[in-house]
Image (cartoon, rainbow, N blue to C red; front, side, top):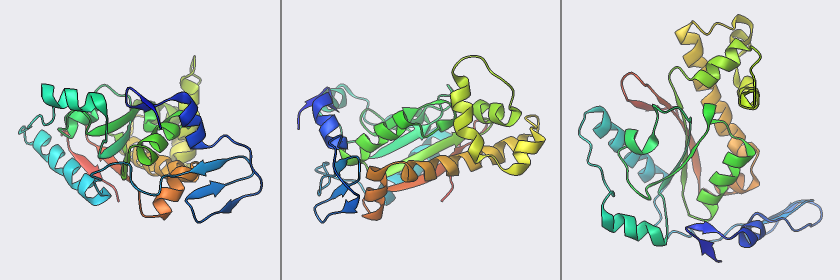
Length: 247
């Protein structure tokens, strides 16, 4: 399977996600999911020659965040040698679906380096089709066994969803992806000045987007069912720098 700059060539990627038309859905024994629209082929073996388990990946993230909070960062894997190594191939040990907020850079708050994390960032850490496709690639092609959905305290996108006011431009598409996660209480109060209300909504959104990743992706769902992938939520406090894993 050819790759261009660490990513699949377009033709092979289309073959991988399976755009060939097939018939009624069933599950075969050779790691194929056949639906009425497509055939999705998942490699039987982890593509990473040195795979990192979800549990070990989480331990690394916890340790890195502890270093960040304690101002004891090690700046790992940021040498010229590492730069040259990952220019040839990449095997990130964890994937992060995080918010685009400038105060929440995963590589910094987890004290990681080049090639360690496969990071997808978008306002509100929403599981859009584009983010789901990116995370499918990380899990199925690069062998990442942990996806972290990372939300943060005081998320502006979540606040906008609670506020429920008209917005100009395409930001409405982000807000619309967050609204289903809001509790009835949040929807009726629409109180963006209540810090607890906003932060509870942030956590609800993290959990909702994590479920959406699995529910909207046959690839991710299959890997989870085969115990080859885990999705967990995490909440970042922008005041303290601490990440709290939710499950």
